[in-house]
Length: 101
Image 1 (cartoon, helix red, strand yellow):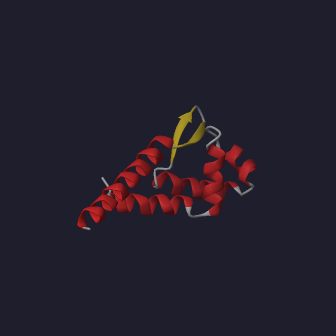
Image 2: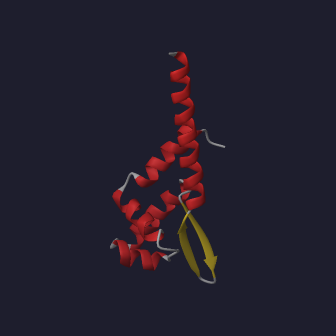
Image 3: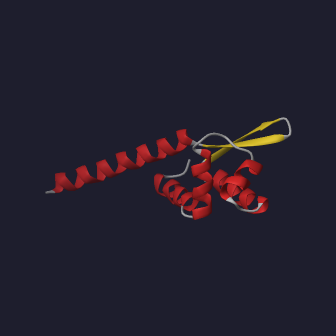
């Protein structure tokens, strides 16, 4: 399992590109195929596929194959888990600073 620092770095890599962020925004409205995403984000199919590959490697997107089609969805469970852990870590660090005073 990656440490929180590495996970946050991967999260930033995923959302740090405007095209990938637009894909995530589209997926927030529900699962979509590559073809649907191409129409929404107005990028070529190869570009959308490359961005989805990065988003999957960052665990921000999951896929599910149904017949011949693959549906992509935002991995909200992972994103919420990651942000919750970040908030807890920040709170812990803040508490440590206050205890040193």
